[in-house]
Length: 223
Image 1 (spheres, one colour):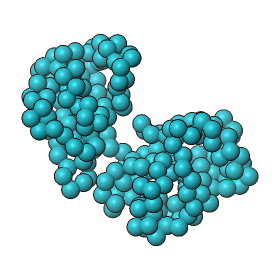
Image 2 (spheres, rainbow, N blue to C red):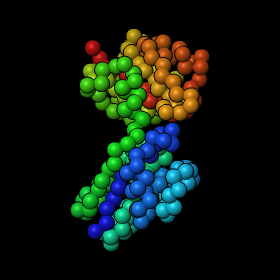
Image 3 (tube, rainbow, N blue to C red):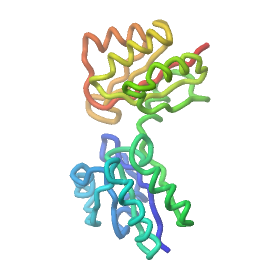
Image 4 (tube, rainbow, N blue to C red):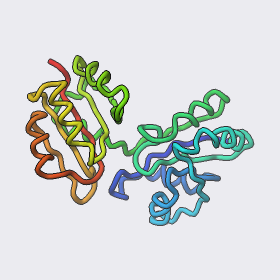
C-alpha cells in the first residue's frame, strides 16, 4: 500500500516550509497541485523535480477514484494547495475522506495556515474560536450572519479584497459597529499589514484605502 501526504506550503515567504515537507515532496511518486504553474515556482526554488498533476475544485470529484487506485497500487502521493494547508478552504477533503474510507494511510504534515498567525496577531481571545472560512456569497449569507451574531467565540473568516468592504459593512450591521475586528493581509509577505479596531473603524479604513492581497478577518465574539 502507498500513502497520501497532505503537505502545507508557504502562504507568502518561501522560507516558511519545513525540511520534512521538502523531503516528502522530493521522494513522492506524484504531487497533486491546485495550480501546477503556481506550485511549479516553489518546486523549482527547492529543486524538486517530482512530476505534478492538477487537482483542484473543478476536477477533484472526477479524479479521486483514480488517485485512490494509484495509492492502493503502492504509490506515495503528496497533495499541496497554492498556499497553506490542503483542505482548509482548499481542495483536499474529498481525497482524504476517500483514502480513509479505503483504509489507506493519510499523513498531514504541520505547517503554514494563514488563519493561525492572523488569530494570534489580532489581540482577540484565542482560547476558543470558530473558523468560518468564506461566507456564502448570496444564498444563505443573511441566515449565516444572523446566526453568527450570537456566536460568543472569536470568529475567523477568509475574504477577497474586492468583497472586504461589503463584508465589513455586514459585520457592522449584524454584529454592531462597536464589535472589535482585526484584518490581516499579505501575511509573511513584503507588504504585510494588520488593521485593528471596531467594525466601524476598520470599515472606514478600507473604504478609503482599498485592500490588496490575501485577507484574513478576525472578529470578536458576542459578549
